[in-house]
Amino acid sequence: MIERPWVEICEIDDIPVRGCRVVQTPHGQIAVFRTAADEVFALENRCPHKGGPLSEGILHGRQITCPLHNWVIDLADGQATGADKGCARSFPVRLERDRVFLSVKFNEKEEGSL
Image (tube, rainbow, N blue to C red; front, side, top):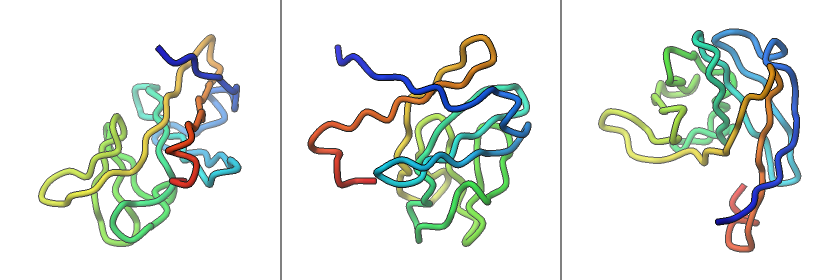
């Protein structure tokens, strides 16, 4: 099992309910979403279709709709839903005592992917 480094990024209340916060990493932007049920998910901030900023989309349930072409992306795994095919990279995120932690560990094969 791979040990992941966890980075504290904010308090959960720093992310609006049904909203997003963008985290800049050396590999690109990660969108951290908070659902109405206070679940937290993290995806690469690029739609797999045309690279639209998912952080600017509409959050509904556990899905985000891309603001460019209305692709619907599942927050849990980054997969496009319906007839659309593609995947936004997802990142492990956890919540501890109202603090949000993100793991952005990249292995050598992943280095250039974000």
